[in-house]
Image 1 (tube, rainbow, N blue to C red):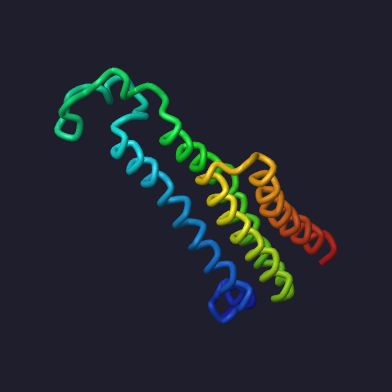
Image 2 (image 1 turned 135 degrees about the horizontal axis):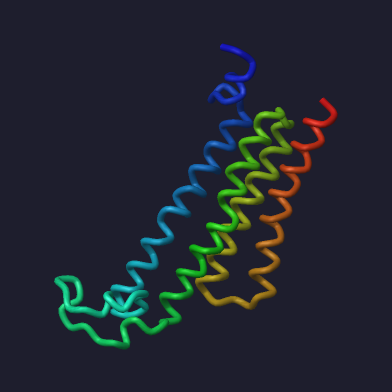
Length: 159
């Protein structure tokens, strides 16, 4: 096994931390749209396109109001968009971070700070907390990614 492939193996504890966190965040990214679907179906509203208000086996009693924005559904959609803005950057930054062989403790702090901040942001958003709360949690997750990117950049330029 070469040094490069050893970095991307489960023998590397930094990669293990990243793989666990990345898997959790990918599940979050992939399950959030299902939350939107469940919300749409439970309130029979918040559909997006005009054809969604036509009669079908899943919509036996269509109503034109079904395609109007519904805050309960839109909140979930906004969460999904927020994930799409953040999680891909984490996945890429985290993988590059692993490749520069950071100290395990630094990797644990930055990676788990991101995951915990995103989980808390999800709870804050679902429970309609003030923007200040959500922004603070977003800040922790953003700073974690920025720190990984800066650390990686410095290691690449210096090393």
